[in-house]
Amino acid sequence: MDEVAGLPFTPTEAAACIALGVLALLISGLMGLLLAALAEEGRLSASGIGLSAMLEALSTGLVTGAAGILLKPVRLRAIALVATVVLVALDLATLGVSGPGVMAVRALAGLPEGVLLWISIGFISRTATPERWAAVLFTGMGLTQLAVATGLSALVLPRFGANGGYLVVAAAAALALPVALFLPSRLGAVAGADAEGSGAPPLRGWIALAGTLFMAASLTAVAIYVIPLGRQAGLSVAVGRTSVSVALACQMAGGALATAIAGRVRYIHVFWVCAAVFLATWGVYAVHAPAWLFVTMSGLAGLATFVAGPFLVPMTIEADPSRRAAMQSGAVQLLAGAFGPLLAALAVSERNIHGVLILAVVLQAAGLAVATALHRTTAAPEV
Image 1 (cartoon, one colour):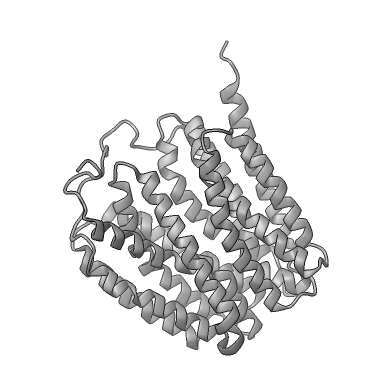
Image 2 (cartoon, one colour):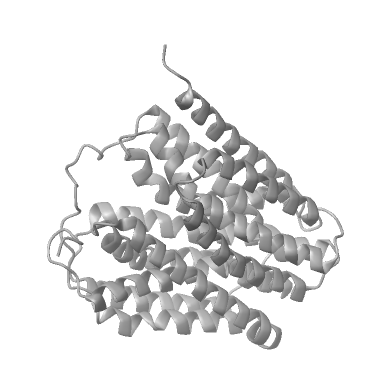
């Protein structure tokens, strides 16, 4: 009864809200595979990979945020049905475009994805334990992305190319049609909306969010170029696709490890250890490493990504105890999904992809410096 603000949700409604978020975020774990497949077919340039990923992530994040401000959470079933139909149509439209057309269509696809995600986040924000439901969402998202990425790499992309991949994405998006029928018709008020924690963060909170943006953007920048980096290292596309699938699988282990160590270790120690893993991985990407090492380091980086991610929140809480910055952490991580690929597109060329690795090192170092400075100034005794 106390789980939500307003009328409680039924288990079916809760499951539908989470499933809608999983389907809306499915593409985020497949961009590296699908955009690289388009590039292999000559339908997208190397810089186009980064720009396409940036535009879709940016439009998704902007719409999710704008919907939370402008839209009332009513008639959710009708909204979800319309958004799903539009998303399926845009996924299918991707089959017939190349170059700038890919960027335009995928940017438009972010609009309905953002609306669907808004519904899911709206449900999570109205629960008494949002961190628990967010964990359920991301666990479901990770498992689904892993399963679909593995199927695409092994069965679809080698035979049917990028168009086959986007057909699978369209079919998955269509699953939101029956799911929408089980959504709650409306959502109640956000619990604690008038509490002291509302409003803009203080300066230290904004600095913590900047650190979040830098660290997360370094990972998204490299993630969409894993397959081209493998190709430049003399490895096959199959090795690159395997690396993506292994990284997704290891993310599940990283999430479990983060859950186990939460509250037992300081976030700054986690960040330093994970940064060492990232730097080692990017070092392997920069040389002509054997396939087994390339795949292994991709898996370790995936594990470290899901270990570090949850600790971004305690960093913002320590910097801003009012938790105003923590309330914006998720939005900033979505923005990083656009910011990283945008900078990556400027750092790579058709002949040399290694510029993205230099960019990632700079961003990770900047984020780590911010986190370290915040932690030391907070921990320092007052005089």
